[in-house]
Image: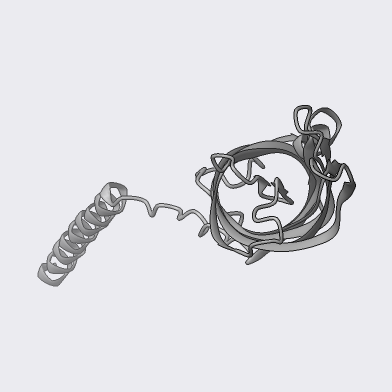
Length: 233
């Protein structure tokens, strides 16, 4: 009997200890914080996120309503939706006659700009851009200059004034700021304001050209702009 009582007492004690241990484990499990599901790491943007082509509407309109303008197209590379290396190739044109002097200026010459834009918007996936950029531009151009015949006041003879194919070139830089909005899928429109600074120029036979393709009026304040229609490809 004594052995039985010891056995029963041992079983009860063991059961009590086991129940107490189980309760402690249960309480520990319930009070421990559940592991937090970690969000997947943000997907890195690819280096090459696409390319775009476009053209400047403003320059085309200028050729129709002002004495000078340009036909300009652009090609742009999208790097990580943040940096946009850009090439702009255009044809600057003018066919203008001064009403006072009757001097006629005519040109149709190419120009090239190379540079990069930076998108300041934090949301890179919206398709919209708030950007700043720089350009380095160059043109090698020819122009014709003509005027009424010059009359010799003494002998009364006339000398024609007609200069053809006068050559010149100019290198300049541009600082620009603009916005671009996504209209539909791959279709964007945007505008930019630019400040142009002459870096180097060659003097022509008649000193300075009236209009420099891509740059604008020679004596202007260096301000310009564009309104671009852009298509993603």
